[in-house]
Length: 429
Image (cartoon, rainbow, N blue to C red; front, side):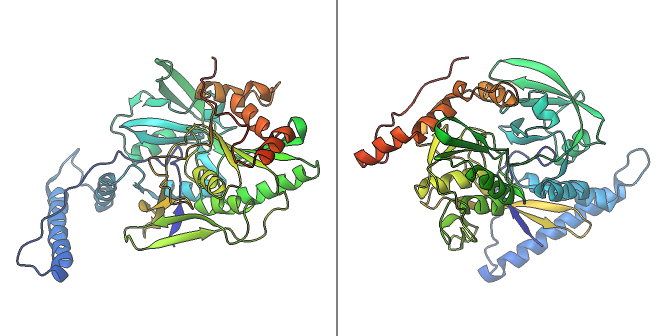
């Protein structure tokens, strides 16, 4: 079975840097209809010869290299020739992915990706060891337990970062925004994040809910939280997708469907066949909470978060406030192999309802409000203490848009952006 995901790669599921592969020239005498089969035969023969040569003559400590090790390495190398989101997953890693998409996985709770050859944190997952240790978006992992990450493979990441809950792993982190390097000791744990935070009521009867990622139970959890919010008679809602690395595309479509009419286009994908377009529509029962809506986004909003934000923006269901999103708009299909391992292969690029390609471009907010990732992360960590939402300029702008007087001005002017100034400023440290 093939499971389609829009995963921004989680801690044990990382991508290799993209590498170009030149096209193979076709022999002049081979008819086009036979070219593919003949080329495949020739290349497989070349591969088989290399495989047998290694098996028969390579020696290290007097032991033969198993076919399994060689084939795993070959598949991993093949996937490394593709884009940074494709990769080979051994059995344990493939099982970890299934646990992750079901809302339970092991690790330290950090979403990572290779950016320009650097192992980079896209976002820490809230209430996990990585989050509690203060790791931030754009942090670079230079070393894992004293071993450099330069040229690291998927297998290396799995072996170095995974372990029994309660054991420790030490990371050396480079934080470009502060030009500093420091060590971070982390204790491994079973990660069971709550993907939808409990709602809060702000001023003027405006509600606030944050989604931290998209897993199988996320839409159900959001519906339950909206039901609780509805009992307090809110007049508006802020949906916070900042720092949300994405997850299951199906979950993102379900979440967007809670705010859109049934059979509304949420996202569509294009695969290698340019004429093949697969559309995803909202379905099921729309939520009764039909309120003015503002969605918060930032550089850590990726994948599924971008699907939701773009759909609600394109259908004019919500205003977006914050900063341009990460720009991870490709679909990875998980294709199991016979031994329990799997390949994670980029099979499609997705587009917003208005035909905007999100991949490598991101989603622009309607109103730009700058907030450094450092300050945003600090504010999120303080939400369980004496949280003052007014210190958050992006959230404050969202509340201002939802205030009754602001909405009344907008309706009176008859313009979508009436009375709402564009904000282009850096937050104070």
